Length: 147
Length: 77
Image (cartoon, rainbow over all chains, first blue to last red; front, side):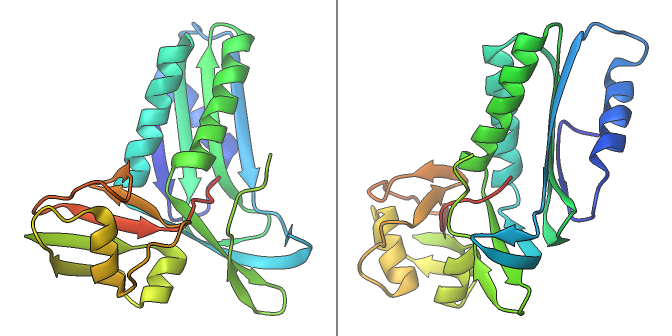
């Protein structure tokens, strides 16, 4: 698997982490620190119950910007590997939306770079969410939560 | 010159189309492409622009064959 992956299907972030680590490192253990963030779809937003969500992206631009964000992280910190997996399409509460993971020799770089991947992704990667509320009403999410 | 215009998310729904090919005047800016494609003279302040999949400002000139995309603020992750 590439270090940037857009998935139209539900994915298991923990299984992917293990599989990716095995594929990239094999028996080598040059990494001493792995930091991972998993974003999961909540069943509430802005005070309303949310049943499902449609996640749209800009094919090409999205992958390009995710790859660039990884490149910037690797330029800033001594990293062994990065991985970003992001879901698109129809998503239900409780399903993972995003996985960002970083492998480094030491924890400081791993924590900082993982945070960077997630924050930059939320600000720069073209994805849009349309929520379906419990009562069936649909609305576009107009901005990300502050953190 | 021909410009390929794309709309995403809520803007796609408002404009009523996902893609359009436009015959634009040479030297047109991204904002002028918006006016022509969306039929609205003013570019709303929250509209984000990308030219050839790179973020761009409204005053950026576009060239023949460019892909010019308009979309709302991104909400991924």
